[in-house]
Length: 155
Image 1: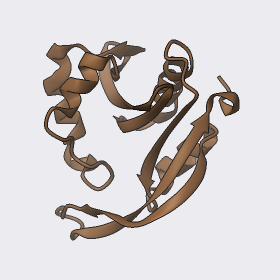
Image 2 (image 1 turned 135 degrees about the vertical axis):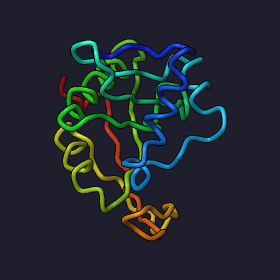
Image 3 (image 1 turned 30 degrees about the horizontal axis):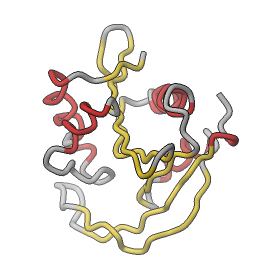
């Protein structure tokens, strides 16, 4: 179940966003980014059987055009979480499109996005310097721009 985040959820979302397993794939949030998303009604928690198994945050680019700021969830929860987010974006928010960038080497995420109808709209070369982790040195990642229009979405 997708639930809109409340101010009291800020520490939980921050911890999930900054979790070590996300360091290679998600840029850490800017100061105030999570609080702004919560205040705007654009931060969500994903609950299954009473457990929080993921989160997603949006941003408004221009009216009716949204960006997916961050998404992370437990294994096997990506598709249902993203479907629920898209239902909200193209339903109550009446969006025309949603887009985001994803590191070009995140094949699992790209397969998920494409399975829901997202299209690759371009490549930005070496646009993000990933932090070093215990398993990987710092490196520059290419990112793919992905987007989905309301008329392409299949609920």
